[in-house]
Length: 157
Image (cartoon, rainbow, N blue to C red; front, side, top):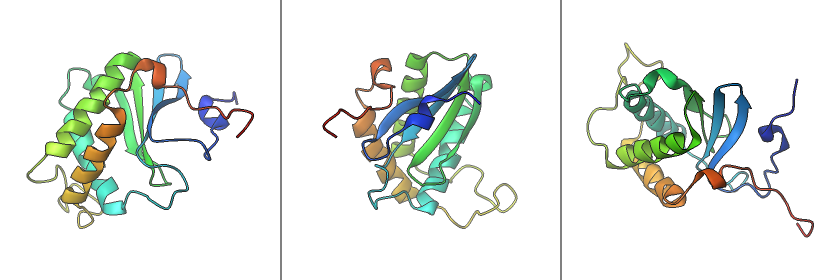
């Protein structure tokens, strides 16, 4: 198996942001890092779950919904992976910003959070999800394609 950028991550220097985790042909995996690794500050399961539901519902209605392969949480509870096909980095960054802006302002029923549609419909927290989205928007508000590379330690580190 070929090494990917994500295999080279130094979690001691990784900050919040959006990074390219892997590129495989026309498929790009984005690391949406909402929390600093190993900081003790993690997304709660209920906020993570709510963000996932709202994000998925939003992207299903976008012009490029067929280009979204997957969106789901990291087991570390520090963020999400977004896997796209044939989308530019610039479009993907703008889409992520747009969706997190939507989550930050969202009011109403959490999409597909019923017993029929969700395996854990009781574990959601909309106010907390909105706060997490607002915090993350501050981090990525000026994010560009040039910011997508994982940070690399300098020799002093």
